Image (cartoon, rainbow, N blue to C red; front, side, top):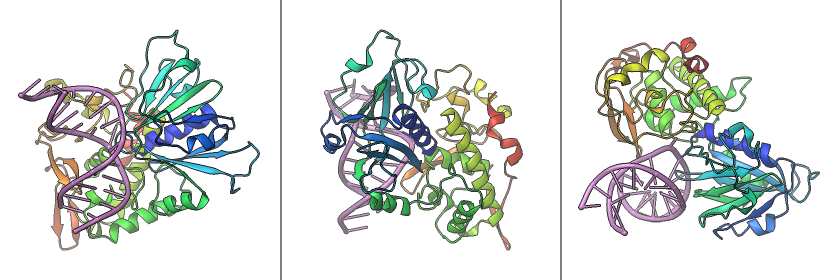
Length: 350
DNA sequence: GAAACATGGCCAT
DNA sequence: TGGCCCTGTTTCT
C-alpha cells in the first residue's frame, strides 16, 4: 500500500537489481501473458512518476531509449500491490533487511531462513509478474495495473499526472503548476491533494499529515487559499516525501511532539511501514500527527482527532489546530503553520 | 470461516 | 457518488 515515495524506492531497487541486464520474465498467475514475449529482454531502466512505475525493456542493451522496439511495462500497485525481492546476499541491497527475502510495498520483510536458494523459490500463485536476473528475482502481486505500453501509451499516462514532488524542479515550474491548480478550484483542499492531476504521489497519509502541518482544515476550498499557503505546502511535501523516499518511512512528527503516546493506549491495529523492525526508526505509533488517530487526543492541543469521509477516503484532522476562519480578506488559519525550517525531516530522526 | 479493513483508481451513473 | 477490481492481515463469529 504505497504512496509515491515507495514507488520511487522501488524504481531504484529494480534498476539496481536488473538495470542493463537480461532478465527472465514470467506470469505464474497467468494474468500477464505478455510476460512471455518479454522474456529474455534487457531491462534498460526503471522510472517512477507519482505512484506509477515504468520498466523499459528492449531486445538488446544498446537499443536507444526512444526506439519503437522499447516496451514499457507500466505498473501501478493500487491499494494491495507489492514487490517481493529474493536473491543472493547483497541483492536489492539498499532495501535488504535480511536476505534472502524481503517484501516492499506495504513493508519489507526479512525471513531468517538463510539457507534458502532463491532460484528454487516457488512463486505464490498470485504472482502477476516475476522478473528474474542472475543474482535474484522480484515478484509482483496484486497490482491494479500491469500492462505493456509503447511510448505513446506511456506519455498518455504521464499526461494524466500533475507534478511529482519527488522529481527535480529547478525552475519552480512544478510548484507553480500545483499552486495554480489548487487556487483555480472550488473543490476542497482535502480532495485536491488526493487528485493525481493536481499533485502526483500523495496518498491518504501524506494528505492528512500535510494538512495538519499546514494547520489547514481539509474542507476549505482550494480557491480560498493564499498563494503563500500553497507554496508552503508544496515545499513541505517535497521535504516530507524526500525523507520518505530516503528512509522508506513516512514520518511527519517533530521529536518534541512524539511522547504524548506514553500516556495513551494505541489502537492495536497500526499502519505498517518499511523498517518497522528497525529499532532506530521512529516507531509507527509516533510517526503521525493525525492519520489513524481518530478518537485519540491531538499531540499539540489534546483535542480529540476527528475522521470523516472526503472524496471517498477517510480524512483525519484536529478540529482545533486546523481550524480556519473566514475573514473579509479570505480564509486565515487560527494557528500558525509548522515553521518549515524546523520541519526538515532529516531533523526528525531521533 | 467470514468479514472488515487498508497508504488507489477506474468507470458507470 | 457508488460499485468494482487488486490481495493480505486482523478481528469477529
